[in-house]
Length: 470
Ligand code: ADP
Image (cartoon, rainbow, N blue to C red; front, top):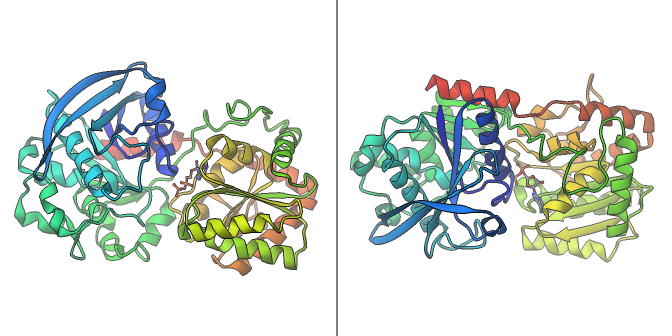
């Protein structure tokens, strides 16, 4: 089968979170399974673009409403990622350094999608599946079905994967002319609550919809940022497929971002060496457990709870642990986390920003990773952490619920808590400190987690079965 993945992110080209990791891995494993999976994404001005070799494969001319533009499709020449990678360039819209966060994101991603469909419509053959990811590509199932000029594509099966339903790409109806002339009877297929909602449109128009864990799919019927009723209505075409992790990129015995490699046999010494480097770099105490947080500092991740939870832990439990936080997001949270640095007694630090190599060192060198998420569609951090022998402390939600069993239960290995509130987080920190001092149990859990299999193998099989069913 030939499967075209359309996404705003793909690791290592451009990544802001889990979407990038998944789109950078799933196609590779689909190819390994004997299929032809390709990725199409915007041509941001990233380091990857400058460092690699490209050829122009297509030039087209199309329009976003009354704005006519030329787009260019380039292809990476060497198959360096294990799949064919295509980038779409649109002068003035996609030629930016960042992925998101511009005022004209609606224009940027709509024109990107139009260019992709326009390009596919020029092919002399049809792909077997168009697989779109999140709202940035959510209008494509509508376009291939209902835009007059793409009618010849309407029999191509489309799959939408929802990595995060919080962001839906809402646009006012004043922007309806952006979408190439479409059957006006199908207005309802774009609309959700009087807005053009690309994610809702994707759910309505795609042949199948997947979410990145089973529990997240269940939760979406109850809480989906206004789209609950739609998920309930469309449940027949929705299926949860847990993300895998790329075991080649995320392997403590070969990880290119860390110097002190280790395996399950050498986990104790290996982790200690990486912890030493972290503690020296960030002025932390190597003799205390090291609890880290890696991620976007937003409400979904429960990041706003961190300052109070850290303060309360020091107050109620004592200065028995280190905290190291990596992330960026809400300015107020950043300010509070920055402020805590001035109160550190060699047991707290905060790195504001995005840093891929530091994140790898943190997975390797920490003892615990804290994820007090309010919403976690799948969550990759806990799976990476476990592969590196780091104990996850997670709220019982979404993919965290599907991947972490509390060590108090039979066969368990992590720490789980029920509510995204300071009290529950503080209690989990207390449990982490207790566990840390039970070195025998800690060693047993580390080894147990490193043996767990979160590879793409079984998830890829489920995607292939899904494609075949179409
Ligand atoms: P998200 O909701 O952000 O997509 P996921 O758990 O699915 O959450 O994926 C998060 C990915 O982004 C992981 O690979 C994590 O290591 C990475 N990440 C998040 N924030 C940062 C950061 N500040 N620096 C480096 N990597 C980060």
